[in-house]
Image (cartoon, rainbow, N blue to C red; front, top):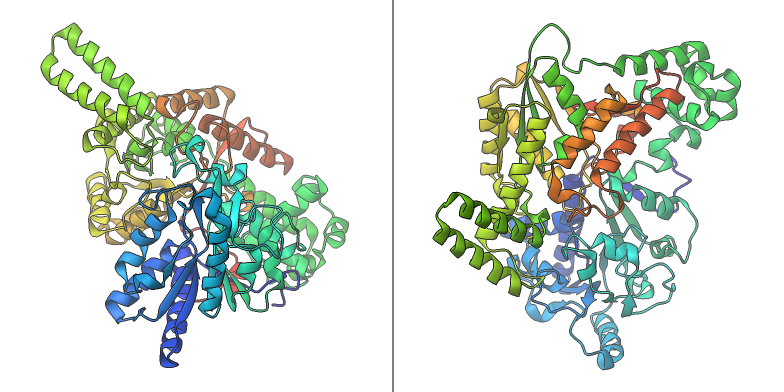
Amino acid sequence: MDNNMERVPVKIFEDSEQVCKVIATRIAGLVRDSSKKGKEAVLGLATGYTTIGIYTELIRMHQQEGLDLSNVVTFNLDEYWPIEPTSIQSYHYWMNLNFFDHVNIPQRNIHIPSGTVPEAELEAYCRRYEQSIRDAGGIDLQILGIGRSGHIGFNEPGSPRDSRTRRIQLDRITRMDAAGDFFGVENVPRMAVTMGVGTIIEAHEIILLALGEHKVDIIRRVVEDEISKDVAASFLQEHPDVTFYLDEAAAAELIRMSTPWLTGQCSWDELLERRAVIWLAGKTKKPILKLTEEDYAENSLGNLIRALGRVYDINLNVFRRMMKTITGWPAGKGQSKRILILSPHPDDDVICMSGTMMRLVEQGHNVHTACMVSGHLSIYDHDVLRHAEFVKEFNKIFKLTPEQTIVIEEHIENYLRGKKMTDTDTPEIQQIKALIRRTEAIAASKFCGIQVKNIHFLDLPFYKTGTVQKLSVGPKDISTVCELLEEVQPQMIFTAGDLSDPHGTHRLCLKIFLQALDKYSHIENVRRDIWLYRGAWQEWTPELIDMAVPLSPDELRKKRFAIFRHESQKDRAMFPGPYDDREFWQRAEERNMATAAIYNALGLPEYHAIEAFVRWPVQRSLQAASQLSHAP
């Protein structure tokens, strides 16, 4: 297919693991070819959760396949300023932890901009960094991520095309995006040292990697719009050898994926038909059943009529399918089912589907919830102090072991008084924070009518680092979920399908669940009844929705009260996400009401709010599948 609306070459992969393996294979090939020629391979590297999969695969290739990296020279894009290299938020620390400590790149060949250079010496230091790149013969392959404002490196909006390595002021969006790593935006450095746009574009080859739904808007702008000084990544359109590597989620708003009929070439299937009709209804501001042949013809959908027949039949087919999604009985009628609701963090279930949870309990089903990780990272220190004070006074009232209480409280106060932003909480404080979240989850689930004996806490090991950096998924993570499945033997399962949470916990929890499901002995009892919810970070688009559960104003109000049970996450959550300043209860209500408004605008029954679900596996159009690249 000729994607003539795209201004740079784009490769799209089904998921993040595939794309990271392909890029790692490309890097390994460059390294081996350079070694055969007796040359050093010069790599430009980026940090962040987007690129960690590349480094994980390179480490595997080095340790298991003998990939020799001793001939590699590296130059990192950027570093916060000022920041100590030993700080857990520094890019020096991140690169060592996630890559350099595990491979055989000589220390003398590793270059990362310094965050400790005195201000008076910065200009000269940046010139030396540029000279080091030139002395190495230039960068052979530059790996890039992309920020929500379109920055590459830390080249914020307005960065000139010919800019070089320099100190730069970070804008508000970038600092908000980094707030989770620094436990609050107020702790994020206001400046950084970064390679310039001109420095980056001089690389012989460039690969830009973008993953996740939260990158869709900026990727569409950079790939399909003209070059703009307000979007530094758009200058990559001028590079002779640049390729964008995207997962399906990040590519979702490219025209060839979202509205391929506008390209003039389209292979129609049921999902694409539904998407086109819903798109047309929105564009013309008409209900589905009022769309006319002229509406189709005037909006590049004449070939849909030629492919599928009469407009009346097309409209009716999509309308009926959307009508079938609406149900007030999410688990069906006539039979009590065992239902398992998996919640990555302790509050995801009530944020995204507590209206449905209450409905399921009211309709007589045996509902279980399971929090997959403790969520202790999102508890503020002042909440720990408040709860410790409560326990002390509680024990005073009831004369319960006051001596032990004093010891624990003194530990808490002494540690938190001297705690630095970069310090990891002690095991005792981590346990207290986890307990706060656990008791809130119990309160929320009980409010939804779930019995305490049906509330499970898995405390998966991959999360137990004490920092936002997670461990790799291991056998114990999978076996823990397997044990829960065997214990509950659910006939219906709900789990999170929004994969854009700030640190990837939702994505890892879904991966763990699916691997556990493959080992579940009663999988045939549940295979067709696995449902994905969203709401904390984004909502399902209407053409994908398989089940829509309406909520009345009273039910939506009760949902708000369920979310309020997570008191520590109210007013100001530790990790609100990089692109939404609303509280979680506000996001949930507004997204549920927006889904109902979409249904109403399409000519479907009008409801106050709707919680939406998609059946696993998520349906993909043949058109989208045909656009996917494949790992070698």
